[in-house]
Length: 293
Image (cartoon, rainbow, N blue to C red; front, side):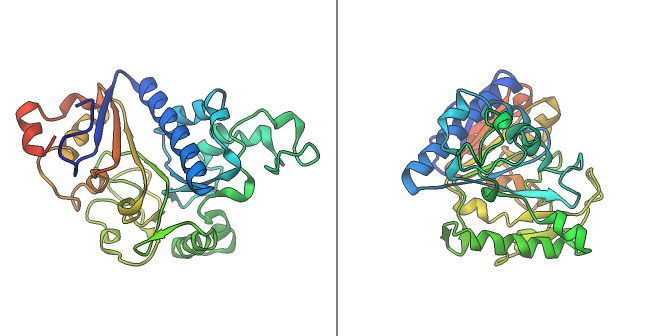
């Protein structure tokens, strides 16, 4: 299970020793993917995730040697989903990126131009120097401040995506890298089991009511899961014994994306990086063959 499956419809599955190894492998891959995208197309569009999954990855990308490998000036940072809370709220998916990847507390006022007169000297060595104009959180802060709802924020995000001149294929925005985790119920992004978002055929971003079955019980905004169909690279990370049961189900023989939306990332061209604890309930040899591994 440590190499791409022979059946091309399945993703690459890599089992690593521990969470640190998962973070290191993911960070290396993201750095290379971003660099290659900039070299090939002049820009890179990365949709990242929230929660605990990306923090270790961010730490590695924010410092040399990986930080120096990426042409950050041409990187656009997006989010796959977020909770309808202020940007500095502990439940915000943006806050870990602000604090760790971007190190905004050290980079306050950084223009991203690289010129001495534009940068705060004390912050020039901190974090990934993505230009402020290229950092694209959902407009949740603006929505909350003006008394608007998640639907307003979702509509605003689609408008921002279209204005950014991101590539479009089949009517959907094309991200060079989509980083996602897996929820305990098998959700990805903020697309929960049985969600109407699974049927949305046109909107690029969607409002999601507060879930009652998983925490936190707050409303969300999410990209349409169909963006995964056209993404150039999809990277799924999972670690810890707490993810073993759901990972075994999502990668098992039964296919039901309505029950387990994370199966939408079970596709050719995706890579699943998991640690041994999370892999504890993956199918054995006979079951794996039945599942297509």
